[in-house]
Length: 137
Image (cartoon, rainbow, N blue to C red; front, side):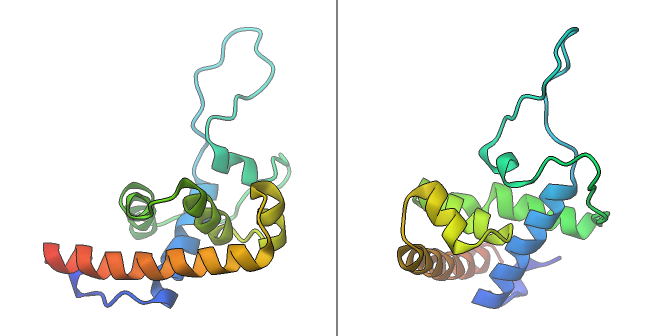
């Protein structure tokens, strides 16, 4: 997929972020090898805490190669373009489908402030992506 031909807008960025979140949920967890006698899983990343760990509920999505490539682009390149760590968390949690009120309780900000910060981060990401991919292409 030639990303330099894509005209990045807010809807496209939100679609890629939600696809990356779905792919991330369907991938196997990254865990250290089990030690004999260990009876609990070690959570290694903060975004693994977003998913409910019910063993009965498994994601039904089998990601395609294109969707995994989208996940790699979002996780490895796009999040470097967002300056604040708090904004990165807000964008990722919102892509995972977490409501503004739950994000606000976890981060300690009001819904209105979160909405403003999320929209600013997405708009900044759109501008950065247009500049980044058009320089490459």
